[in-house]
Length: 114
Image (cartoon, rainbow, N blue to C red; front, side, top):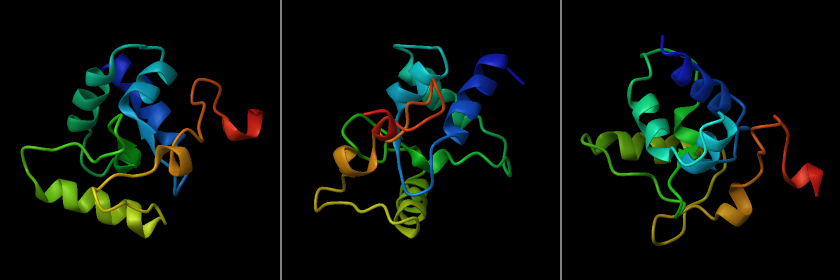
């Protein structure tokens, strides 16, 4: 497996249940600042059955990013809702409430370090 993808998967694995991180936050945590798209590529390439909580990664607007197969958008939303993540009427997650909880580069909560 690509070592860059492994770093991305390790960062995603540190996102706590019921919280989200943006593609950019994951990229920075993986030591790849400014490479949010690479996080998307890595998650698209995630082997089936690998225990990485891919569904906890959203775009910078707090939205589930569109996919070639729309059913995955619904699956991601349902998985997040099952964890207690709420969406507003526009289909967005409040990043103030559910995001920013992880400072993945250090493997701890940003809120805990405030």
